[in-house]
Amino acid sequence: MSGLSVGPSTVLWSIAENAVVMQGSFIELAILFAILAIVAAALGAGGVAGISMNIAKWFIIAFVILAIITALL
Image 1: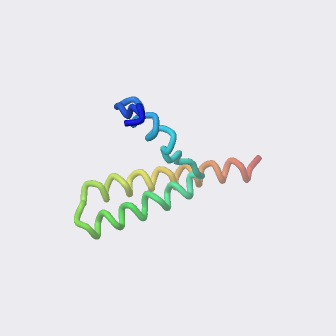
Image 2: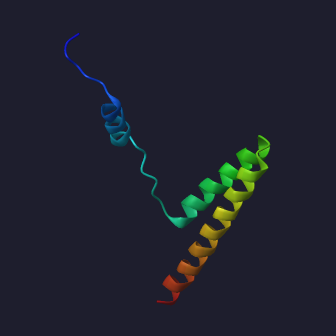
């Protein structure tokens, strides 16, 4: 071996470097969770579908409230 040590800390560091950062507007996240809910429902995962639709609903509500406040200001 060439002395290259691959331990748990090396693996975790590699995972942390390649982590996906989820960012986006409320409407983008709402669409993402709605699509997740549709796919989950199609695959028969009713619990995941219900939770995803609930999250999507709250993102849409937050988006609409912030859009109204922005329009008034």
